[in-house]
Length: 191
Image 1 (cartoon, rainbow, N blue to C red):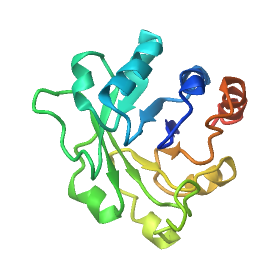
Image 2 (image 1 turned 30 degrees about the vertical axis):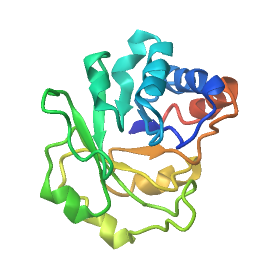
Image 3 (image 1 turned 60 degrees about the vertical axis):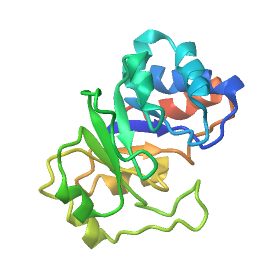
């Protein structure tokens, strides 16, 4: 299963570089830099602080022009940034909130589907899918990543459906420091 971490809306910059390194060094596949209120310079500084060999596993949610500066893993399209720059020809991922939305366009490297469970990071953002709904993922060949309320205890439930992996935000110990993040991601290493 693909393992993806999504940064919180607001993070502690003193810890974030070490936490991102701990996630990627711990065997996770991608880190999505979500930070909707971050300036271009703030994201530029964050990416510059990471070793260049990790850049290919970083996914941007905004400030897509940074792909002119760095070789990054992917751009993630969402309601705030619904299109890639014309000059970009790399892989794209996308936020989806229904199975019909996924089936309507299967040209992405992968999509996230949410909320699968009640969200941890967004109060009142409740699960939108039944087991019967999720059974509708069968036959979709594009990788679908479960997002929303995913915790280590719930990963087994995801394996019953056609998910290619999971993304976590609220369950990750952001701002607890690199050593705590390393401990957390290592417990999920063999999934």
